[in-house]
Length: 431
Image 1 (tube, rainbow, N blue to C red):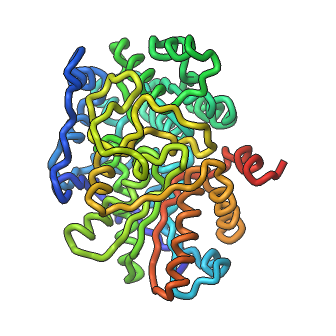
Image 2 (image 1 turned 90 degrees about the vertical axis):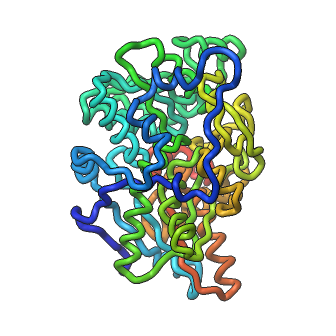
């Protein structure tokens, strides 16, 4: 069987919160000791139900019925595929490869899983506008769509260098009704500070977060929605892995290795955390690999310490693998991986040796070549970020095959690449 599907009735009714099952307590956020309370700031600008979920010790959090209906509307449950053609292309006989199709959402990525949840809760709290950041653009697109579905306005601060070359994705966000600003922008104090230093500043995700937080804090009808890193975001994304577990049950098999790309951690957490529960609670033998870019290899070269999530220091200090919130990173096409820190949950699991990580060179040639192999064999054009997962999967599969080791690999395809064609043309010399 090459395609494993779930019926609508089999859609998970609960998100999984890994916090009660972690091998040690998750370090709590800290105040930096100067200025205003960062926790009180977050309580003012963020969605209250999401902050409640952020600190919840409840293992299974019920998905509201109205949200289940929205998940069904946007095409969940999503299929799991066996990559038989890729296996043949690679000459595999011992290794089986499966991939989860998060690229099939209307805006084109896994980000919609939490975008719908955050928009739903914001609407219930009487908010009229969602404010956010975006790096590669998938999160901004997903939140713009979710906002439109729920009758909310949407303001997006988009990392400038990506804003400038992803014109078609910018059009899609605007079609969904979002106001989109190149970050750093001239409408926030944070943005003006960086533009003064460099009028052509390429921007970064932590600058865009800082701008969004500042902007949201100055409007009574607005609330801030974050696309990655925080606990509640990863929890909303676990619907990916929970579906995959049920799909593997249908074919009486189970992965030995789970692979995904990682910037802040939302898509990696979404596919991996339910399987990590199988390792921690059910004692299954499973490995986990996070694939990163040399531009920002936070899990590989970062330090496990307290740091801010944004350049302006508006958030509480979070214990994470971090390269430093003031770091400046070289531009890459897989911009969703260009973030200074990994999610606190992912960072703790890395510190405990449950997750391993690797990175690929900043020129991205290897990852785009892998994505081309995947396109030629499986037929799907993946996002630049997902190309990292494909590269990691191919390399691990070939290594396991060489070891004559029977293995099952699961990777997450976090988004489609139809709006990344310019990047493919550049990296593969197709112009």
